[in-house]
Amino acid sequence: MKLPKSILYLLIASAIAYYSCNSTKEMASENPITNEITNPCSENGNSDSNYFRASANSTSSNINLAREKALAEAKTQIAKQIINTTSLIANKYAEEYKIADKQAFAKKMEQAANQTSDIVLKGISPTCEKYSETNGRYTAYVSTEISKQIVATELTKQTSNLIPDINVEIIKRITDE
Image (cartoon, rainbow, N blue to C red):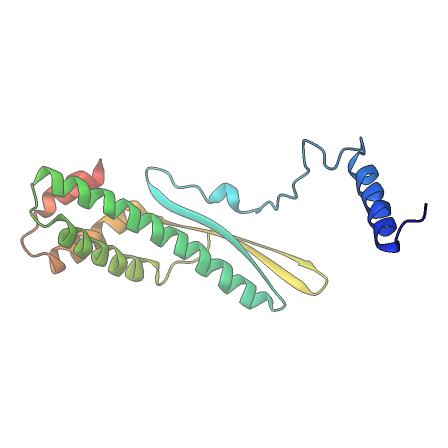
């Protein structure tokens, strides 16, 4: 009995597929090894009750560009913390004072937070700076911080400018909490 070539090829392909899929060899280990990049400045990058902190790193063929990019990323992280904290303050204030248009109030508070971030982060400099070089590419590691008291003072100022009828004493009390 002679089989047509197409059927013969189909049988051979099926046999190869069957035996290759029937292997007992493990494809990947259950505990994959991860390449975790450590930031030598990360121990200085955790916020606490007194400071907003952040750490970041960036790689470039230019060491100054790597530093600027890392510093910009750290500033962005702090700005996000300021905005998130302000959002919490706005929600608490709106609940306590039964603000009718909570969405408009929250939007103005977010605007105040953005302005505050722009002002307080403008002149901030790193608290930790380290560098590494591999194959002509530089990695800059930075961390930075800003006092929450400085942020609270500026936020109060910006909030009172944007929302003239806001009770700044209540904002200060909520901020201190």
